[in-house]
Image (cartoon, rainbow, N blue to C red; front, side, top):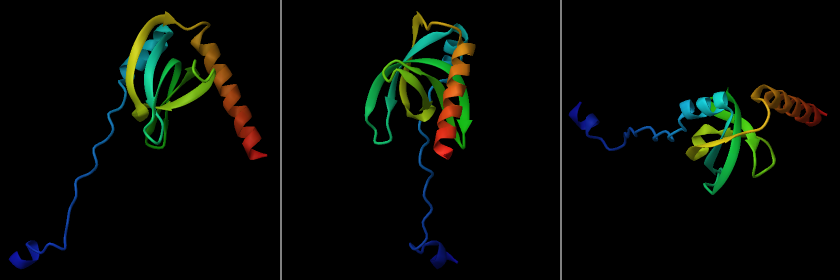
Length: 119
């Protein structure tokens, strides 16, 4: 068996390290207090943009954590993959309105987009 164990045709690799995800507790606290977050977000190619977001909801899509919220840069609702948030900083500034109302607006927008895509 020794010659089989020493045979170099068999290789076991280590699992790739998981990307460090954003501290979800920070996001939850910002949601509860309706506070804005400054984030550095990476696109699929690794390019980073700094954004101020109003976090309104956490979700899971397949094996990914998603932070839904208003993006001041894009002036629209966006979904952010938590594993692509490189840095996060809670701001003292609160976002306007109630989080519950923003969630309703976001859900309406998502439903309208889904309906338009299915036509």
